[in-house]
Image (cartoon, rainbow, N blue to C red; front, side, top):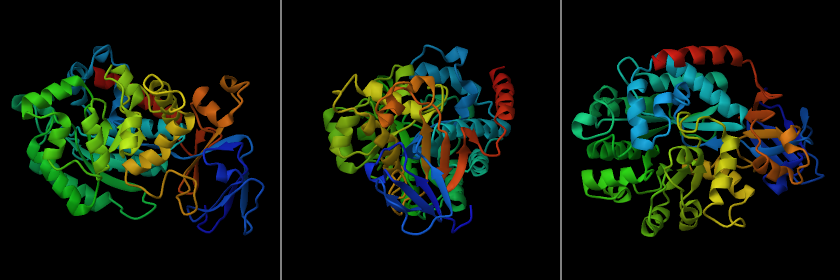
Amino acid sequence: MKSNRRIWIKAPLATLEPESAGGVVIENQLITEVLASGMQPSVPVDEVFDASQHVMLPGLINSHHHFYQTLTRAFPQALNKSLFSWLKSLYPVWAKLGEEMIEVSTQVALAELLLSGCTTASDHHYLFPDGLENAIDIQMAQAEKLGVRVHLTRGSMSLGEEDGGLPPQSTVQSEETILDDSERLIQRYHDPEAGAMTRIALAPCSPFSVSEALMRASAVLAQKYDVRLHTHLAETHDETDFCIQMFGLRPLDYLEKVGWLNDRVWLAHGIHFNADEIRRLGAAGTGICHCPSSNMLLASGLCSTLDLERAGSPIGLGVDGSASNDGSNMIQEVRQAFLLGRLKYAASEITHQKVLSWATEGSARCLGRDDLGSLKVGMQADIALYKLDELRFAGAGDPLAALVLCGAHQADRVMVAGRWRVIDGAIEGFDLEGLIQRQKMLARRLAI
């Protein structure tokens, strides 16, 4: 798209933000006008896209994932297990990851996300066995090919089984190696400017896989470069027991001890917090990425999303890894959040608008972005458009609610930074069938 080309996405069938019922005008990768119903652009446009058959959303934002896990979906040895035993069955498999596997699994995850209407994805990669030191560099290259906005986190594991941790020694790195590579990646890829396509965050895997010293050092490095911090926390009761046994503290107390209880941090899962801990998280402005499908598959529990949000914590949404979901579909994850939320809260409180807000504005806040997640003037032109022409939508009354209640699973059009990346349900210039065949071959190789 030419830099000054003006596009009017005109009069959508429905939209998450009613003030954009007449559509939006895009120029220079930004939304420059938001039109009420019946309004016309103030300046002539170069292109009009008739969205009268589409529900329009801000591009969905996935705030927690593990791309590499697309290689171990429904893995036989990991079935019907809770988190710790599930991890122990998969760590030896993941230790065999190679560069081509990272390349292909990243493409698969990003393609699936993009086709579901996701325009920004955060990945938590923490496995760097010998020969895979450049895993994040490989992921960055694939994101550029697909045109997806990414927040890649330099994950880490330093506490192996020999030191009382959960992962095998072959999957851990020294703290010096981790911190040196973290600094390298920030300097090379982190773009702090509005509209950034690539950002880096620091993400020690979890309290049971890294040392206290690495948690502290990561916080210091993040402050030095003004990048965000991410980790898994309070996902299971086993984790709570581990923290009490290892550190003499509950997970949140440990997080505060190592300098992580602040608004630079967002946490994956955040299920097992008590009322006082929820209050403290909210007061600190610490974000929580809700991962409903993963939480259900691993029988981890129900996140107190509304309590956390009311306390002041941003709530985002994430698909989590494709070995604990087992997919990478953001619009389906919205539906899961909706249904799971109604097991804990009143129907009037968990609405389709609420869960869609978690997948857009909420996730943007978790990632520290004020230029994504809504259809307002000055925001990045990241937009997902869905048709309601499948059998599942027949007879639906409210088009916006139908996306969630009737189970939308694929976008018809997706725009990232003002550029169409999905047209008629297909990724522009992308060999999806060829990718599927490569993925199957590599998954079989990894399973041997």
